Length: 334
Ligand SMILES: C=C1C[C@]23C[C@@]1(O)CC[C@H]2[C@@]12CC[C@H](O)[C@@](C)(C(=O)O1)[C@H]2[C@@H]3C(=O)O
Ligand SMILES: O=C(O)CCC(=O)C(=O)O
Ligand SMILES: [Fe+2]
Image (cartoon, rainbow, N blue to C red; front, side, top):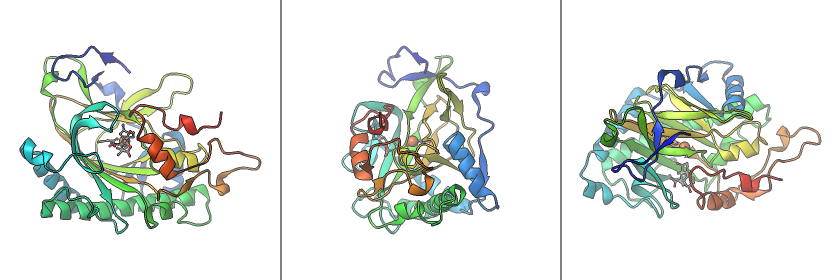
């Protein structure tokens, strides 16, 4: 990572080298969920990158557009009005620039929201209070969650697991820990005149859950780290596509597959020109769920690479870490 010296206005937000055309990840795996062969293609992408794009998902453009325009309306309110929907911690609501509780900063504002067992925004969180926004988000969350479940079922099929719902059941069971996030990355005016510099929108990290399903408004900025083996990881920019979803493998799925799927390191880079709005659904299991390699996936004599833990234990540990920390390291068997 190239970090340039801090300028005055964005002084707590790390600057990064602006991505150029040669950094574009043109070969992002694309999976058409409506076609035979999706299961195999998903497994292949998860093994190689922990990341892929989903088309043929069946979610209507209306559902996505309504949620997006309501989100744009929410974030265009006066700061005092948005602050009334916060703070983001504890436990959920609106936040700005501060990510997590351990000092991470990014050039963004966001809503962090809990999703309940019936796939609606949890009543325990009053934000957002606007009825039209809440209804649009509820419609979107129900739709994106179905996509996540279909993807998890296809993963199980592609992995040759007998029970098709082995993975999807973990996020549909009572008490599953589902989170929804709306991120807004405004243009960063302080970057004007700083040639070749971008600001960190959301610093590099892996997602702790099983699966994350992302959709953005078509403004680029998402980057993933390509596995580099012994060499340093190479950051590549994911060409945006407002009609598609992007799926990240999370740390928990890496463990359930004993490292066969890799949880993808990713980040968001912002510029001085265009706002990015993104929606991310994070599918996590109930707190008591044991996270350990699925027996069907262990070869003869193969042992788990990880110590035993529950999702609750992992989440508690994860929330004590900085964004860029290797959260799984403390659970790896030496
Ligand atoms: C710095 C942090 C933010 C985060 C909690 C953490 O301590 C480490 C994991 C971070 C992350 C990344 C994926 C999701 O955006 C998120 C909601 C999650 O579950 O883990 C965030 C957490 C957050 O923003 O609170
Ligand atoms: O906003 C984005 O596009 C991605 C953000 C992200 O990775 C996250 O919220 O975990
Ligand atoms: Fe993420």
